[in-house]
Length: 124
View: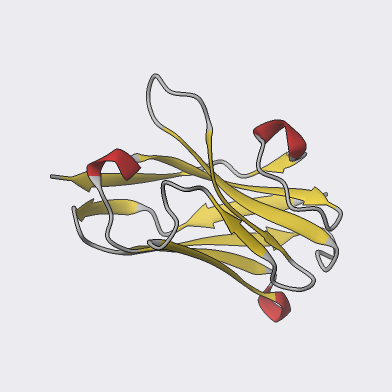
Protein backbone atom coordinates (compact mmCIF):
# COMPACT_ATOMS: atom_id res chain seq x y z
CA UNK A 1 0.00 0.00 0.00
CA UNK A 2 1.58 3.26 -1.15
CA UNK A 3 1.77 6.03 1.42
CA UNK A 4 3.04 9.56 0.87
CA UNK A 5 3.59 11.93 3.77
CA UNK A 6 4.54 15.56 3.19
CA UNK A 7 6.30 17.73 5.73
CA UNK A 8 8.16 21.02 5.91
CA UNK A 9 5.39 23.49 5.17
CA UNK A 10 4.98 26.67 7.13
CA UNK A 11 4.82 30.44 7.11
CA UNK A 12 7.60 32.45 5.48
CA UNK A 13 8.07 36.00 4.27
CA UNK A 14 8.40 36.86 0.60
CA UNK A 15 11.92 36.17 -0.61
CA UNK A 16 12.45 33.41 1.91
CA UNK A 17 13.06 29.71 1.44
CA UNK A 18 11.39 26.50 2.47
CA UNK A 19 12.17 22.82 1.92
CA UNK A 20 9.37 20.30 1.61
CA UNK A 21 9.84 16.57 2.05
CA UNK A 22 7.76 13.66 0.83
CA UNK A 23 8.39 10.35 2.55
CA UNK A 24 7.24 7.44 0.41
CA UNK A 25 6.57 3.96 1.75
CA UNK A 26 4.77 0.74 0.97
CA UNK A 27 6.41 -0.13 -2.34
CA UNK A 28 9.71 -0.18 -4.17
CA UNK A 29 9.83 3.23 -5.83
CA UNK A 30 12.78 2.77 -8.17
CA UNK A 31 10.47 2.74 -11.21
CA UNK A 32 8.08 5.50 -10.04
CA UNK A 33 7.49 9.03 -11.24
CA UNK A 34 7.06 11.55 -8.42
CA UNK A 35 5.49 14.98 -8.58
CA UNK A 36 4.68 18.09 -6.60
CA UNK A 37 1.42 19.97 -7.11
CA UNK A 38 -0.17 22.90 -5.34
CA UNK A 39 -3.66 24.24 -4.90
CA UNK A 40 -4.65 27.68 -3.68
CA UNK A 41 -8.18 28.59 -2.56
CA UNK A 42 -10.45 29.07 -5.54
CA UNK A 43 -7.90 27.74 -8.00
CA UNK A 44 -7.32 24.47 -9.80
CA UNK A 45 -4.62 22.10 -8.70
CA UNK A 46 -1.44 23.26 -10.39
CA UNK A 47 1.62 21.33 -11.51
CA UNK A 48 4.88 22.38 -9.85
CA UNK A 49 7.61 19.84 -10.57
CA UNK A 50 8.20 16.18 -11.35
CA UNK A 51 11.10 13.77 -11.14
CA UNK A 52 11.76 10.30 -12.47
CA UNK A 53 13.06 8.28 -9.57
CA UNK A 54 15.31 5.97 -11.54
CA UNK A 55 17.52 8.52 -13.31
CA UNK A 56 16.79 11.94 -11.75
CA UNK A 57 15.15 13.41 -14.87
CA UNK A 58 13.18 16.51 -13.84
CA UNK A 59 10.65 18.95 -15.28
CA UNK A 60 9.29 22.22 -13.84
CA UNK A 61 6.38 24.55 -14.33
CA UNK A 62 7.41 27.87 -15.86
CA UNK A 63 6.14 29.70 -12.79
CA UNK A 64 8.71 28.05 -10.51
CA UNK A 65 11.60 27.36 -12.88
CA UNK A 66 14.82 28.78 -11.51
CA UNK A 67 13.40 29.14 -8.00
CA UNK A 68 12.34 25.60 -7.06
CA UNK A 69 14.37 22.40 -7.20
CA UNK A 70 13.01 18.88 -6.97
CA UNK A 71 15.32 16.09 -5.90
CA UNK A 72 15.22 12.60 -4.44
CA UNK A 73 17.19 10.35 -2.15
CA UNK A 74 16.72 6.81 -3.41
CA UNK A 75 18.11 5.21 -0.27
CA UNK A 76 15.64 7.11 1.93
CA UNK A 77 12.63 6.90 -0.42
CA UNK A 78 12.22 10.64 0.03
CA UNK A 79 11.52 13.40 -2.50
CA UNK A 80 12.30 17.03 -1.74
CA UNK A 81 11.15 20.37 -3.05
CA UNK A 82 13.55 23.20 -2.28
CA UNK A 83 11.70 26.50 -2.69
CA UNK A 84 13.71 29.71 -2.90
CA UNK A 85 12.74 33.32 -3.60
CA UNK A 86 9.21 32.60 -2.48
CA UNK A 87 6.41 34.91 -3.58
CA UNK A 88 2.94 35.48 -2.08
CA UNK A 89 1.46 33.78 -5.14
CA UNK A 90 3.27 30.58 -4.10
CA UNK A 91 0.87 30.32 -1.16
CA UNK A 92 -1.02 27.03 -1.46
CA UNK A 93 -1.40 23.54 -0.12
CA UNK A 94 1.42 21.51 -1.63
CA UNK A 95 0.79 17.87 -2.48
CA UNK A 96 3.18 15.05 -3.18
CA UNK A 97 2.05 12.59 -5.85
CA UNK A 98 3.32 9.31 -7.27
CA UNK A 99 2.59 6.90 -10.07
CA UNK A 100 4.17 3.65 -11.12
CA UNK A 101 6.24 3.92 -14.26
CA UNK A 102 9.09 5.99 -15.57
CA UNK A 103 7.13 8.60 -17.53
CA UNK A 104 7.41 12.30 -16.78
CA UNK A 105 3.89 13.43 -15.88
CA UNK A 106 2.56 16.95 -15.33
CA UNK A 107 -1.22 16.49 -15.01
CA UNK A 108 -3.00 15.67 -11.75
CA UNK A 109 -5.00 12.86 -13.31
CA UNK A 110 -1.78 11.11 -14.33
CA UNK A 111 -0.93 10.31 -10.70
CA UNK A 112 -2.57 7.48 -8.79
CA UNK A 113 -1.26 8.20 -5.29
CA UNK A 114 -1.41 11.42 -3.27
CA UNK A 115 -0.31 12.68 0.09
CA UNK A 116 -2.46 14.72 2.44
CA UNK A 117 -0.75 18.00 1.62
CA UNK A 118 1.23 20.57 3.56
CA UNK A 119 0.37 24.26 3.82
CA UNK A 120 2.82 26.84 2.53
CA UNK A 121 2.00 30.47 3.27
CA UNK A 122 4.13 33.32 1.95
CA UNK A 123 3.46 36.75 3.41
CA UNK A 124 4.18 40.07 1.73
